[in-house]
Amino acid sequence: MKDSIKILLGVIVALVVIGGAFAAFNLMNDVDKAPADKNSSSDNKTDDVKNATLTSNQTTSSDNDSDIVKEETKFNAQNGSGYYREVTYKDGGFRQFDSNTGELIGSSYASDQDKLPSLE
Image (cartoon, rainbow, N blue to C red; front, top):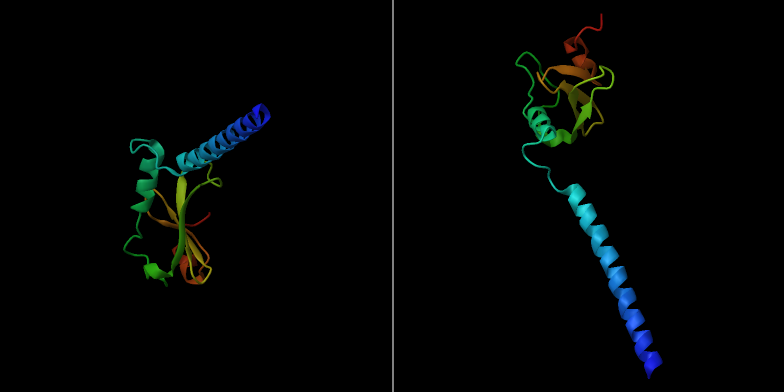
């Protein structure tokens, strides 16, 4: 009888340990997905990027929001500082906008090439 109680207690302890590890793992994943403090500088940068818009002299071949597949903010490694917003469309094309000014700085569309800043 004593052996069966020890086995039962061992199984219960093992289940508690495994359940605790599983709960901790899920909690850590939820913390990574939780929104950061509203006062953090990264949130402010993201808000600036979300509010960036095309200037009035720029036209797009795809102004319909339903054509947008993905929008993401990326570090401007080519410039060495700052961020830009990259918008990817259903047709596989993309446009890149300066996060501070909203100016078009990159595009895969031939019709946008004359609107891009000069590299010279």
